[in-house]
Length: 221
Image (cartoon, rainbow, N blue to C red):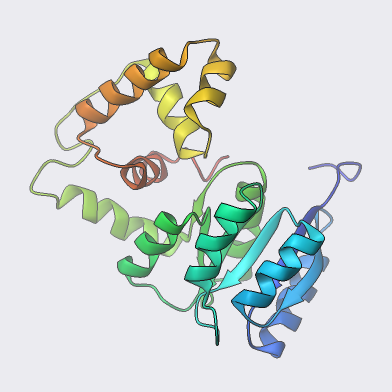
């Protein structure tokens, strides 16, 4: 992003003042980012998001009152244009899966290097997804351990058009948006999606996102 391009407007949601202060210094130190508001819990995050309309909310999971998971679910329903990057100490797969289902576009561990968060913000700001690099190995192992049916294990291949459709789905685009982008009908997009998912043994949007991460599609978004 060039100096003349507008900055990503970011809202920080974390109940620890010291953590928020550190994040603000880190983010405001980037030429393409700025913090527009800070919240100490999920309810305040929703209120401030409605007021400031940020591009991205960096959301802690464990907060008093309304936690980050509920806040993410609510935010994605009320302000779908606002993306969420989860920032947490929880490295369990269960947390990752739940936050992705809730609509988070990024998942970063607090114990990781600051560059992970910056990469996540830029990837999500560009319309993609990002999962902390320390977790992608586990995602790979999870796929390969699914009773031998994981993507790549079966040797299945998909067409170039099916690949394009999956990439756009993983980046958060709707079938209608994909149809417009690729100059196809919505029914044709749905057919490509169904064919690709059948060939790769994918059963949900979460599977598509995880597959895209393993292919390296989303980190380069």
